Image (cartoon, rainbow, N blue to C red):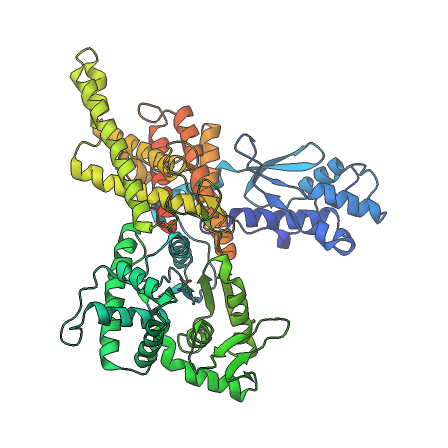
Length: 632
Ligand code: ARG
């Protein structure tokens, strides 16, 4: 080849990524330099083709760690421009030239040009073992980013109504994203924007007063708030009773005007509902920092918000209503209704202004179903037009998600056509797991009673949970974790079919599988300690050497964590970390298949690898909000 073999200046040398840095992105930098060095004119011919494309291989079956795919596009750009250097006759030659021009980088052990010009990358063992040691010493670290103050709005169910599966998604995805962003170093304000100020309170108040005539002296028993809601709704929708509708309307006006009795009844309803939501949050392990800051909170802030919009000339009057039209949008925001009342739009305008100006958040995240995309787009644009949000300073995201479907691919409903209650789903998942753990226990007991296999029996019963309380706790962790993981592992924009068999399966990409692999890691550490091996000493020494390709694969996977976190953060897509967890578990399974730990001459190194994987998986599970289970 005629291509100058990498006269690389010292200044082009690449900084070796530290433990918390993104590895793929450092490789990308190295290839960026290589492409430029090998073909200096390419940048001007086609910036696109000169931009380094480095990615993970198409699956675990490939032996290389990563690959650079620039050769093919660089070849066509150069040949189109008639700038191919002499001697370069194929994309493959381009690949060879790029690889030869790699600057010293401390990361790449060797490269190999494959097929039409893919450059396969093999990373240094030393880089991976030192990263693994750092996991043991400092834990799994997030890539460094400029910290922001994130106000994230999620869950946000409606008072007096049941939470449904749509709220389930918002709760699970929002919780995971808030954990990811917190882990990545941001400051998080978790906001539960509950519907606590809508017109539904009119009919509820009117119905309550009929049902509990002594409401002025005694607090009515509204523990069954959802039943009361349904009854009130039936009366409200009953065309033969227009008087009820009238009264409902008057009650809500009185409430919003600060009527003492109505406020007291309203507060009771909010409390009862909030307690029900909290029960679900506890079961789902939702971060305790999620605070109730519903629509009513913004009510007093609406008049000044409207005044500001009006003084800036942004509002249009239309038959008594105040509208805000936004350039390029057909539908306006309803800033004030013709009867003078405030609605969903008014509240969100006051809320976005509050979050930016008072809370001083510089990243706003709204985790709300795709059905509200228009409302949010209008709200975000309005905030910009009003001068509250500055695109250069504030990042604002609608984290949208698809619907949960039944087997018929339609919105998930019960047999009788009602929306599915969240608590019933969780109960069911837990019940299935209890049954399964019970079966395991009985299986182990039967084996223990069978004298012909005494050795087996003892071994089987030692690793099986027999204590009823532990079975229950584990079933909760696993059942709820499975529901959450099944939701999080989807690309959030797609709809998915709710299916217990698939989400509770012990193989495939499920939380149960992750938990199973995690328990296996623990079990090796436990057994090694029981047999008197110095596990703690090996972990403290963290003297890791790679002697088998499966070790290399597992450690590369652990080292790719920072890249996964960065991608999850940028895309606000927790499924990126689910994928990382699943792949880590499969690489671990291969490691355990190929590499003996207890009794092997490499014990100290291998047990340290197991311990690092335990630490990494535990952190990763916590980052997406799935509680790890040590024993099954
Ligand atoms: N309560 C609303 C619902 O159930 C969701 C509120 C979302 N947050 C917001 N700022 N609009 O549909």
